[in-house]
Image (cartoon, rainbow over all chains, first blue to last red; front, side, top):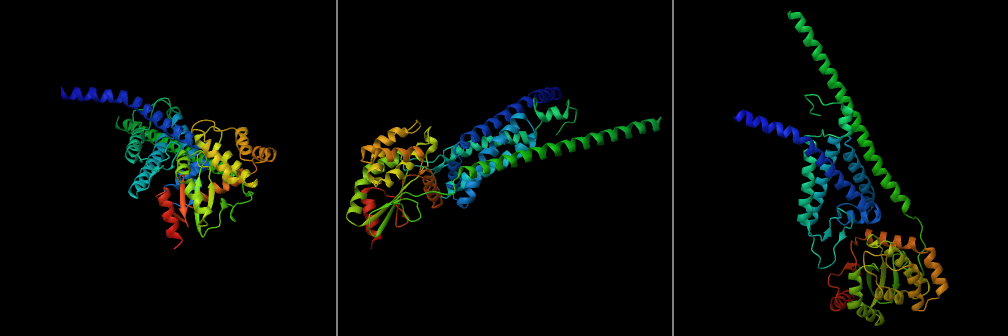
Length: 173
Length: 238
């Protein structure tokens, strides 16, 4: 009995997993496309948002601030099309870890800034409270999506899948 | 019998090895393509950013030597004001403490350097922060910077909209006594837009991350009330 129960459980997981993967992939793609799109219109402000963390010299911050929105858009596009999904998920996870570390460090140093995650950014007006915890929790949620794709990168309707051809029994890539 | 089975096994091992090899190659190539896409995207961002920046600027008359703000007054203590004409908190600050600053200047206690930074371009659909700051440069050229800055705050548009049009900026200039034709052509030519960028860039470099920021002799003042400012200036002139 128990054998069949776990067997049907595994079968159900095998049937659901690919579609959870698609949802995670498109969800993470949307996050990057929205985050990059919100920043790409004002690269100077993006540089100032990076500079507000006060972890690097201003000139470095402006370059990072200018490059980051485009990298985010490109990551979003890779995930949207499902090209090199595991690599894109890995880089997403690395970026998100850096963002969480940045927010936590701003928090611990007592800075009052907006994370600038989806545009805006910079110092908050007096009397405006920073919302570091929700920002970190949100990024951890995104990190979970990236983690799912790192473990199970093969999803339906993806360039990866199309390149690999029909799935074989031991498709762990 | 056993040799046939052995041959079959060997063939299967070879097939699997080839499949693994193909898969490895495919992963390598897609990864290389993906990394190239990301690197190129970052490069594009950097290129767009550097093409947007202007290398040269003309500071309006009345600007400091480094061209980072408009200076007025002759007092021994320097008050640096970093404000964006679209920023509501700056408007509030001007209303509560503007008169105190004017008084400190007229009493000869302080000199003001006003940095009209364009931090909030994202909060208008027409880059109002840059346009209004560049227009204030035009007002400085006409010798009416202080009056114009005050009038801009009095007519501050809300965040998130189109801001004031260039025509409205010109009307305000004419209202404070600037020559309409000279001022209008300065505004429409964007004569001081590169200067605005320089002012904004310099403020960021100086660690100003929000507006308003007030510094007295280079030290940021947390208490921007009239009493706080007066005390900070008194302490600095000792």
